[in-house]
Amino acid sequence: MEIYTQKHINTQTAWYPARTRYGQELGVKSKLESLGIEHFIPTEKKKNYRGKLKEHPVIHNMVFIKTTKQNACDLRVLDNLPLNYMFDYAKHTMMTIPEKQMEDFIRVFQASLTTGGLVNQPVSLGDRVRVIKGSLKGVEGNVLEFQGKYYVVVGLCGIVFAKAKIPLAWLEKVYTQ
Figure 1 (cartoon, rainbow, N blue to C red):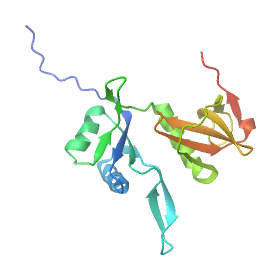
Figure 2 (cartoon, one colour; figure 1 turned 60 degrees about the vertical axis):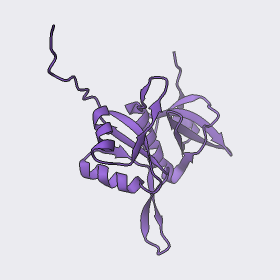
Figure 3 (cartoon, helix red, strand yellow; figure 1 turned 180 degrees about the vertical axis):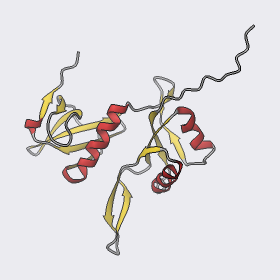
Figure 4 (cartoon, rainbow, N blue to C red; figure 1 turned 90 degrees about the vertical axis):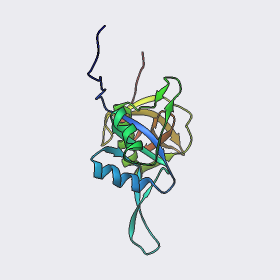
């Protein structure tokens, strides 16, 4: 009989979507920054009633954290962060978002602050496209036409969607096998 004394710890990082309590997004962001943990909380700056620019979450209750699975669990238990990770019932584990998909979402969201916006509901899916020019070059998503304007839409596991206005000439159709 062989005794295993060394733990097999998974050190692979992934993006974990989580929910937090309403109004706690910026507090969670501050704590994650102090711990040096990569994260994304969609925010924008708006003027408050005094005319000062203040950061506000765009998607309430949502936090995206890039870390190992063990560290994600430790954040909730040991660091007492108010997080509830989303669960992938098909895989019976915590939901993860692929790196490329998260990267594309962040880029489209940042561009959307001036040229698009978040899509609150899933859109009627059009053609799968890739942006071939501009600051969003390489981003893959779906094309959406609304009132004669074209948008590239990127979603995260059916949770949230972002769109950015894009010239139709900057899109190429992606053919899947």
